[in-house]
Image (tube, rainbow, N blue to C red; front, side):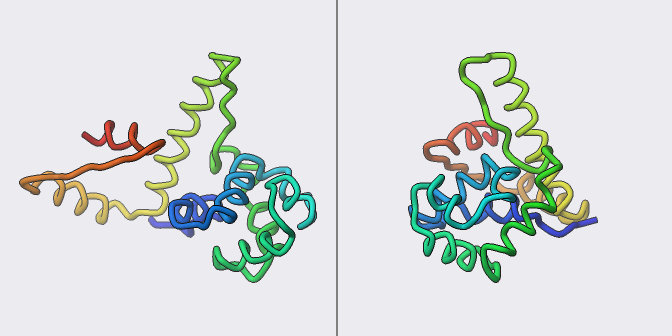
Length: 149
């Protein structure tokens, strides 16, 4: 039942290993997928605070043929808001809670959609049988590690 990863999934999975410049571009793309679909390479570069060449390199660094393919891949998922990170507005507590909830549901659905049930069962059995499970997190991933504990 595994499905193909979306560009959003790919970006999230590559985020920890991206250069500082690529990370800035990825963060902008992840928080504004609908807008990026309609942007030029120069507009994205300006919005992310990088050069046009950096956007072009970024596209190749994440395994795409170029910026145009990035836009095509984003267009495939941009209308499905369940597939990407929703902005959290710290000034609107109710909206923030809804976005956090939606983001967590999207993460779980993405994981389940990409991993076959027998594989998940194997993972759970391996964790349950392990004498020790070490969990680590830093910065923004610390809450995930705390949840895992």
